[in-house]
Length: 371
Image (cartoon, rainbow, N blue to C red; front, side):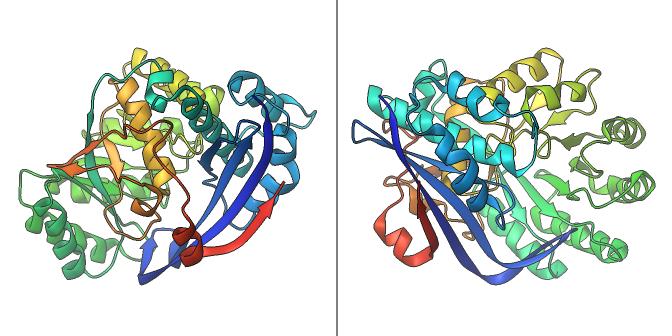
């Protein structure tokens, strides 16, 4: 089996309401998907979850040509060809997101050729339903955020995550979080994501101020390289800190658990290097005593890949689930995975269980390339 063609699709979904976090806001969400073709007539789908201004260029001119002729079932060799073939290495960033997209697409293609779900190739499914938390409640008015959080609880979620931490919003963010806590009640867990928006002193002050609201965790309070700062914050605050979505490959993650920088590690399968890299990260982090709960804020491809990985590796804890209907999520599933009482069912179709259908392209396509 050989790869014969790679298609690149740039999609954009406009938002009815802007999404804001500590680093800015947006009025649409963009996605760059890859579809890998082989000489047996099968295809595999991946998602390049990096800087959307450059992802198509990286794939079109650098990565996609390098996989033509490769065997999609020899993912280890294909990954080495993409990652290690040049004198000037690029061990992180959007380049790794492009590699991740192609790697995930090859798992999808390979599993389809075997007629099994991807989780079977990852070691076998250990569970059918994955516990999830409601994510991506971006900062807005306290009233809107509280009402939205309450709806997530009504849908069965027992954990809710919100984004705050923009400069000059300290007092307003306290009001936002107080309103959310009141709306969801004392039993539902509240996660707070700062999107790397603070330095150590700012995060310590903010973390202490919200402590009475009993956060489940404080996510990405600091830049990703400040692992010692995350450890310091967790020790000082007395409740968990989470980080990891901006780290890449097993080599980039190892300093995070040697020693453990915080309680929760959040690798993203579409950013860290793909499914095989993610498996190594999960095994080593878990062995070091860290709890792994994957980052997942992309399209339905990322959701499917994360579900299959979590099915095969039960040591992974909570799935990040986007209930905002702002992503190209359900549209990529011929049979969308059911959501019941805060749990998501693992897709059972061969491959990842996702397909890029014509009606989705007609609705969201911005640009298309073939290599």
